[in-house]
Image (cartoon, rainbow, N blue to C red; front, side, top):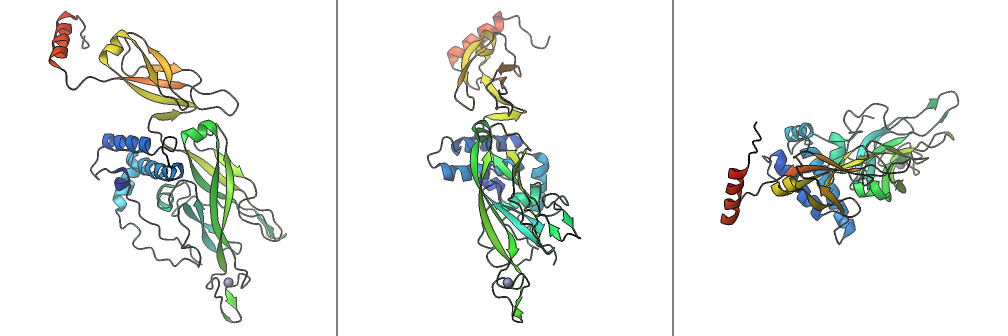
Length: 355
Ligand SMILES: [Zn+2]
């Protein structure tokens, strides 16, 4: 049996972010930040709905906010999957959401795993996921060991990605993850035939889909790329062999306010020119409430101010820092009175930034 992939629904990331296809990087970032703030699960009334929306926005930004991914996406066009021709076995059509990648059944036949509740769409996974259906790394995600002589086979490991928000990385959480995979059809014993006819339960494929739901603990302090192991939740073994494990690879969701560098959180703060010159006490957000910081007099744009211990937690205890990166914004319009003051300042000042 050849490898098959289920057709997945095209995602219009431009539409999701509400920007034209010609949007600049800055426009895309701005649209993401606005939507991500609006739909952030921590502020929205309907948390479950907001979470879905937030993850969709995040996925769109992960693609459009990355020049290489955006180009790949643009090159595909909306008809990227038009050639796909695959009739899924009974029961597979109804499974929505999550990701998929080809695996191998107990008899060596290939099929797909599907994940739900991980925060990524099938579409994303097929194009950009670590196990992206086409050209997924060989052996990765279906690692198994077989001993021909003993005729027992350890079940293969299953690997998927899971989108984790910074709030989850901060506090930890428990997520419900669905894994759908093929199991031998009981009706025909996995042969696809019954009493000389094509099995009417599995349609002759010898397999039926089975969905299992696992509660996965996301510990506080997880980092990008970390693999969470769920022991014994991979594929079942053959001939009395042990089950494989389920691995979920952490991918931190983009946050509207913070970016992540190791365990540190970066936050860009806009200053008025006089705040930068004179210094100021201002409040900046963290992942758990605002914090007051002192902007020293004579602060330049791009300067970094460290707030110790307000970053992401470390597994071994303690926390990273919040790093506040300064930017100076100038008023785009001024009143007559303000203009006079700036003019006076221009005359008075001996400051020349080009000297
Ligand atoms: Zn059957």
